Length: 284
Image 1 (cartoon, helix red, strand yellow):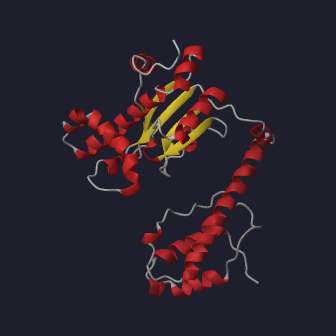
Image 2 (cartoon, helix red, strand yellow):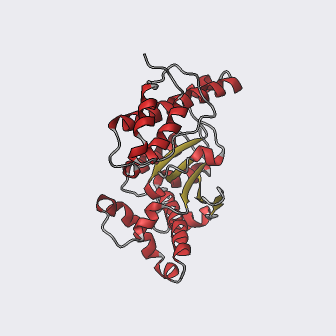
């Protein structure tokens, strides 16, 4: 019969074992494994640290399979411990929280962001569940051939009647960086070509920036601006604004250095008027 231990403590010991040379893994890993089990009954641990991001390629190449299995089980169980802790906290603050949540959603915002795991929309903005309808993809692109993105915009605008649409990029974006690289990236090529097209549209400005880092940051901003234009080109946004005077489209960029959002101050009405010279879909 195995003794139970909190997944958080097991995760800590496992991460140490995984980062150590194989010669130092065997004994500690065996002891940890003999005292661990699938923890489905332990109490929530609100202060337990989440498992640190780790790619499989960074693990020791010749580590015991049992250590890999143990880490995967623990990192899985940790999410459920955190979920129980979160649910208990919400109930303690508002006993009717989940009752109200189950009655439906009425978000103010549609958030179109990058899939990067470090930029969760609600956490960096202080929003609560139900405040934002969220769509994320690599490099926060809005492509008219992407039925996923187009469906999200139509549903958010026509059915949820969001008041704001935010396209949020971030400095240090891997997708933007990859698009700046002269390299065949396989299946990513057609997706990243959208960012390369942004570079082509603003080639003169970008080429005039001598610092590679500053040029990279500026391309991140220009990509957000162009994706905002793509949102404004859609029929749901144009028609809703003509009828209701919302939603308004915003372009923001998140910075890892200070954790702050930068408002690119999109002139929504000005961009809309410019776009509708060619892309007028309001039937007027």
